[in-house]
Length: 114
Ligand code: HEC
Image (tube, rainbow, N blue to C red):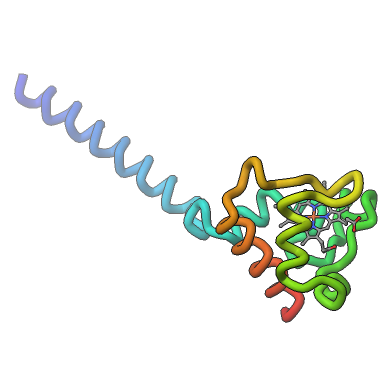
């Protein structure tokens, strides 16, 4: 009786340890970081490095961030993300807060310096 309790307890402990280590191995930046949000929502077209050197980036002729920062102020970029532009740059004001949009634009502009 007692030993079967010990047995099942250690099985549970073993399973918990396994889950814990699997989760921590996945690791990476904390979810909801601006970088993660950018990589999830924007990198498909703009590229993780901002160069738009991706399948969709080429298909939609997305300019590289290094070119874009010369043409657009931060405020102008925020406006593009809020309202969308052309046929392929969507408006994001429904799904992102103004603070998230500002953070994404700052992160995106930062890629031009790398
Ligand atoms: C489906 C492809 C696609 C996705 C996804 C996308 N964009 Fe764009 N984006 C474009 C295209 C195409 C343009 C150029 C529009 C034009 O100038 O006509 C653009 C333009 C921009 C611009 C204007 C300056 C520049 O770089 O040309 C900003 C800023 C921008 N996008 C930010 C974002 C952010 C932030 C996200 C994620 C929330 C995002 N985009 C997601 C396609 C995309």
